[in-house]
Image 1 (spheres, rainbow, N blue to C red):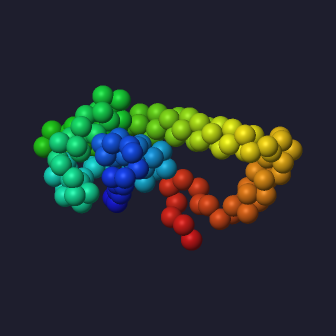
Image 2 (image 1 turned 135 degrees about the vertical axis):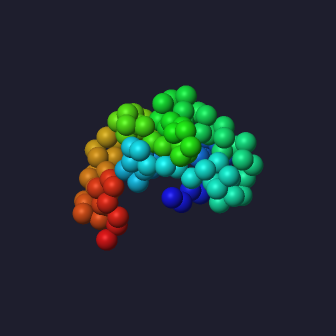
Length: 136
């Protein structure tokens, strides 16, 4: 499992870890029952304080997306995929709304925006693998 943090993006490191775990669950890179790296392993991999990773794990546990399995580690819960897909859709909808607002502020009308969206969708068609599948 590979995570990446960007200390300069303005979002706290623990929040970046939370978001990446949620996205990995949503796209089925992490599956129910699968163990996450330990706090120590992940803090070493990301070169950050173990308390930062512990905070991220606490937030994920509070949302019931991961659970501690005594003697084994931290694993994805069975209910996590549906919850993470719902959150990811919401995040994507907000992102699309922001882009549409930018386009409207730039003077584009609904027809122009629709043409751009249609063009981009045609260009992406067949190039993005479904969730859980590796790219070609």
